[in-house]
Image (cartoon, rainbow, N blue to C red):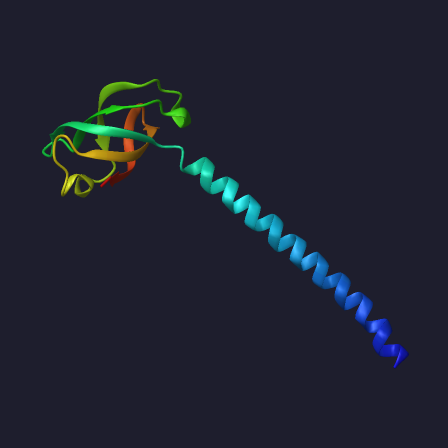
Length: 110
């Protein structure tokens, strides 16, 4: 019986380490997700499907250090423009790619 009791302590210590690691990993995932989701809300002002461009009036985009403004952006994929209309509210993320600002994520808001 003593052997079993002696074996329990290392198992409990191992479980404690695993639980702590899982909690830390979960917290890091939440923080990373929040950092990646630093997009902006905007309003569609113009759509140029032939050029795969979108003009947005938007708030500040912290991830690319851009103040609020109205600006034309290329979109990563022309299909991102499907279903959009002038006046739609959107949430988006943009990045500087080869010297141009490109919308990389675009979601139409209700």
